[in-house]
Image (cartoon, rainbow, N blue to C red):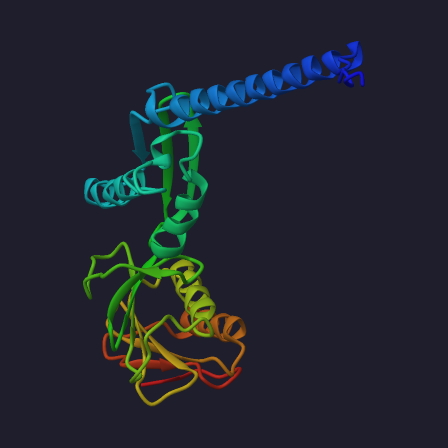
Length: 264
């Protein structure tokens, strides 16, 4: 009995398939290696090389003490670590300049505006514009500078010479500028100045909701009430001064009733 002979056929098609699989695997490995290489190169360029490393942060328009404080806060940001060891904010691309500018505006009301500009590849410039103080508003929690819009900031002395208006709010538990009073105080001070009357300071009495007293440099005070038309009352005052003038014995002029002037 003749033995059976086993034969195995290797076709050209099988050989071509194996070659294609090897080529595909080689290509995939090459692509992965290239991706790893590119990612590694980008990571090195962004976080480890000095190409984008911040070398200079310039703060313009602020005092030395403010500069030191803000520079310290920026250094804290620069040294912030991510993923255990990376410091992404050392890179000028990732440094949150606009966010920091907005945070400084929120936390430091003395600044009216802050602009941040990146100068590639190593320099960041912050430009600060400080508010212009028009007066000092004193309340139960101390005295603060304020600008024409009524924004208050900082600690101020109760007296700052003739350049700044002093407003003393005598009411208890008042901790911020009263925006109801502010525009009328501005109006009164401005008009009195045009009349040649200097203003020493302004008081809001402790037991009032709508009165304020303007103390003049001439030694008398003028009483106003928010319930009256203050502009009209100032016009009435101007007529009264033209007709009667002021004597050294005058203690006060009362303008709290529309169309009338009372004085003592």
